[in-house]
Image 1 (cartoon, protein in one colour):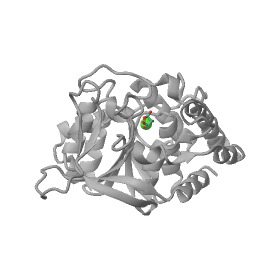
Image 2 (tube, helix red, strand yellow; image 1 turned 180 degrees about the vertical axis):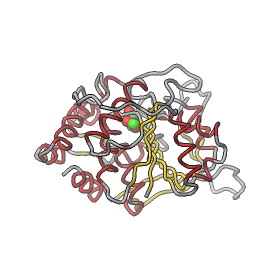
Image 3 (cartoon, helix red, strand yellow; image 1 turned 135 degrees about the vertical axis):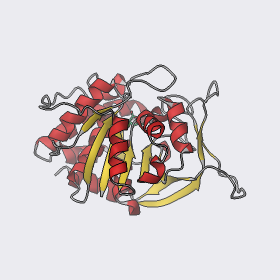
Image 4 (tube, protein in one colour; image 1 turned 90 degrees about the vertical axis):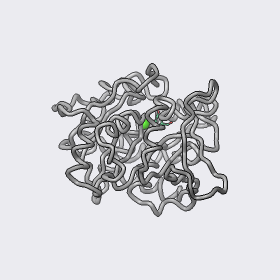
Length: 309
Ligand code: BDR
Ligand code: CA
């Protein structure tokens, strides 16, 4: 399968890339970087560093949006470290990003391969919104879109109701949800319950080699941040779960379908993902998203560990 990854690495973005890079059936056709966990300059460099680390140094990386469509950007150094990778220093990449923007690269690739590319979006959705501006037929050209983002029926993480990827660019997210993609939503509803435990992190620490050892160091930093939330050493696996569901849809054991909208005006709720779950006549003009609510957690975590061996 051919996969375009739009991301803001980002510790959990890194683990998602590690997983995709390790899967023999996955061809990563391109990576778009977006602001989010750090500036887009840093996330693009991190994407290059990570593709080198995970053995895919030939994948094109394109620099995307440096800021949201409307609001001012906010970054997440306290969650992902000053360098976006838990302050773990990786070798400098030997190559540079491509000249096209992330939106341009995505649009070109899907026009060349209509219906044959899946998109994994694990950062703010700004690049996808810009790509929609360049190519309104994007939802028909992309085979399937898996988004990590939102907090549908659980609390948010950057505000009481909003999750980071959506809150970082609510207007972009709303444009993407409105566009009619075949869309799976991997929201905090499932990612906050799908965690790498202390025991799993210990097992990863024992895996030799640069890939596992650097990933282990990233996640150790992440788990210290999450200790403040969970009270124990463990961390949510947001972006890796989205990557795993993209590759193996059978990991999902429960989901509901509903149109999802993003609150753009609420003073307290801006960036909230609102799923309309009423029993309704089938005339909602918005295509429903699949909101994942249960996954095979043990199988997912085993696969993650295997991919780093
Ligand atoms: C999401 O926000 C980012 O900080 C993570 O990389 C993940 O994509 C979780 O809310
Ligand atoms: Ca991310």
